[in-house]
Amino acid sequence: MTDGARVVVIIPTYNEVENLPIAVSGARKAVPDADVLVVDDHSPDGTGALADEIAATDPHVLVLHRAVKTGLGAAYKEAFQWALDRRYDVIVEMDADGSHDPADLPRLLAALSGADLVLGSRWVDGGAVVDWPPWRLALSRGGNRYTRMALGLPVKDATGGFRAFRAEVLRTIPLDAVSSAGYCFQVDLVFRTTRAGFQVREVPITFRERTRGQSKMSGAIVVEALAKVTMWAVTNRGARLRQRVGPRGAT
Image 1 (spheres, rainbow, N blue to C red):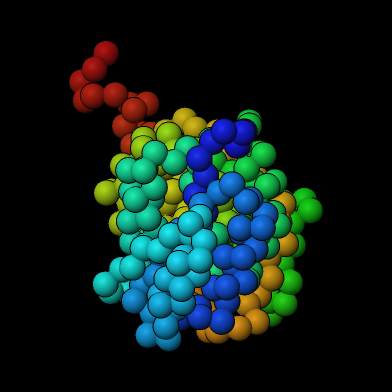
Image 2: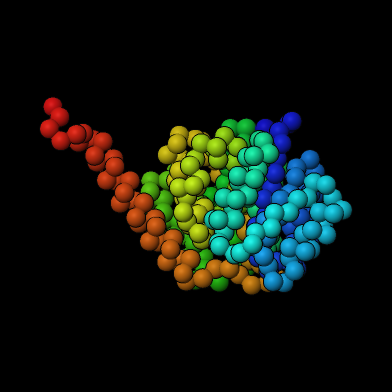
């Protein structure tokens, strides 16, 4: 699908100075014709400055500096709009912490030949997670199972952050209406993508726990995700019921 297409790999960062060079070099090696956009949330550890140094030596690496840290969702929304304004055809999400293997990027991009959004999935056949404790495995599996049942999503890994979009999807989805700040931002995007009638495909990946730096996962992120998925499920079922019943008094 990517023959002749303009591709950008978005890597959001906050205090990832140890991981950033590995993530960027891995992406550049895996997809040499793609651009890499580092989106730094004003990291106090110097990640943004390091990104500028890398960009100064490679015209395919660009940096978007954000003045304050307002969450993963806000960072991605700003980066998506940046990419759409510059007419990229394919927009990729990838974490900076080493959990996503850049070598999988060509498989994600190739799968776009039959889809509008491709998810790198831990929970389809062939997918795996390495070095997670049992509680984290149970949380992710259970959260994805609940999300799938509550929202009727045709995917097994709605919360993962390794994915490739056709630009048309992000032009169609009203990004201003996506208010999620944490990891449920990823669920929100999949939900809106499927409701808009776009095709979603999953390809197996191996997800590895970070070995450098601190995880951004917190209890507040989990609570936000659970509450919002439940709210979306109730709202969506109410809308479907109203469609079946029709206007009051209709015959």
